[in-house]
Length: 469
Image (tube, rainbow, N blue to C red; front, side):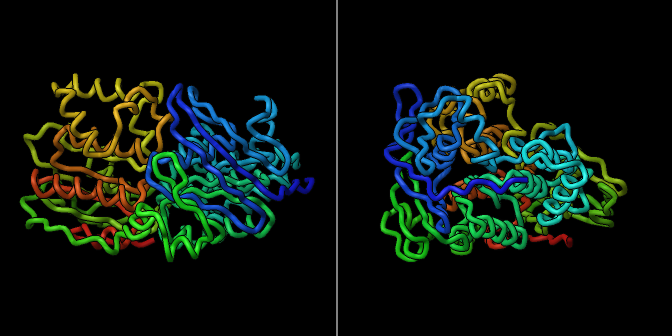
């Protein structure tokens, strides 16, 4: 395996991204150099991921980029399509925001990492297998090499995607929300891995809404808002003394500082389960587990990635069958009022439908008016222009807000929120939880939330259930 070429810098200047005649990202400029990574913070839909895809040469159909993006002396925007594709994985690698977009659902995890070593680096079978096992062991998946993506938790899929990206060994690594859905220990491990990539001479561009991740990575921090880079500077300086109003609001919106919402005492139980037991992939996730969620109550389940948090919620909804135990749901309520918010937003949308069609089908099916949807979009900060885009053409945070909006239109009595705000920046996260808590308080919604964020669960949950590893 030949040593990869190491580039010295990536320079972005005058970058504009347009959708037809509309400019959605404007005049972005920064320099990324060896040993000094760049991290972009900002609201969902601010253009962070679009900047990354412009660098990668993988902008969604209908979008175009202008300006200059230079990797050393090579102008990436001036490249022919075949030159751009030839760089993917070899020179530039991107860890996409959604594991669903990074992993092949038909292949075991070992094959997806191993083929990178075999076909990209030309290793023999034995050497490729050893490298594959090393990569998966380093991200804590050494015992899950035979698993398919659907057999792994969202956090495990994210770690598998990190292993695939690392195996590529590209000189420029773009990490788009690399720690979403991970508990604190795994998050710190990913940050340490990214720092190692920097120490090995790779250029690193990270997109995140996690202020702690940005601080740990160091280097330079940029803050984006409405398609513009409103603040850029050394990490320590930006985090300690942000100049722009939005940057101050973003950095100050840590869940630990949220006011504790006023939620009335819980009413009668909506969903009750006793003696739940479940094995998965040869591992006992939980045994003899009891849980009840009442009307107007917020219950949080916390625990490390892969411990069975999502499985419990799926059992309560009847999406997964427990090995043992009983589940009782309040009778006389339409099944559509028992709802789930998925950890990976693309799982909830048909990929080839526009959001207008997806939302319109739901409104027609349930006899709801477009006026209700438009009012909800305004509350969630979603522009009308997004309706004519497909799920892959909006940000992960925008898609998650559409998922929450669509779910609340059905007036659920029980909502299982699986890392429902893990793709949102702190400001948007706080705004969305205000709406969810309002639904709990005013409608008597029973909310079961899965989260890795201890501060978040402590601020909003009525009760917290902890699962061991």
